[in-house]
Image (cartoon, rainbow, N blue to C red; front, side, top):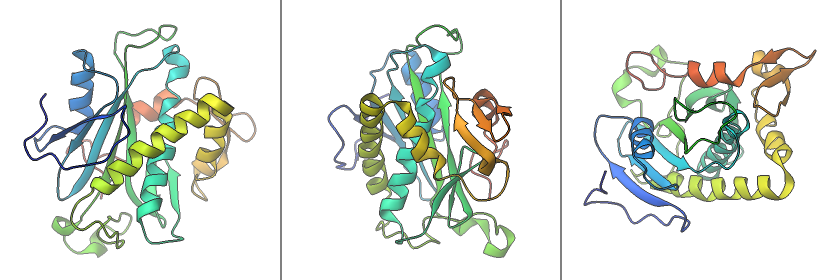
Length: 245
């Protein structure tokens, strides 16, 4: 998968290498295919689209899959912080589902995590892929009143001058920071940053902490397996593969 000829001049941390695509396949699928073929850790795939902000990054875990999946939370924290940095001030960016992103209470998109299908829980995976898909524009969705539960970067007044590259740049920087905080202070520091963004109300608001394998532990000790979240991807339309409107 070679970079396109019109790659934007994004400023990314040195550990990242950018690939821009305009094809029909999702950034998640592109990145998983590249990772399975042995492409380098740090490859960031950005599928340019007027309707979606769709990107994915290949990660190189150093612990067994059972605990390495917690990278999902670092990715979600980085995504929320990147969106918050470029949106109108003081508007909450929250998690729901808990893999969905909401902006001022309306669904904006969500995050996913991929890993090698043949990797055992006690084995260190060759790669992980964190991916995010955000609704950039609902111009083709018709009357906004028909889709009141979702919103878009365009509708919320994000000043991105027609390009979403600034959020991609910001995500890369925030992801590096999240992993640095994890290394220095332990996963608990990421856990607290994630839990603070859980939306008020609904099942996700009752999550008290995150277990060592990434499972959600609710008040009263009830366990919500992370695997169910990662394989369910409730914020996506099962037919189109894009965020629900």
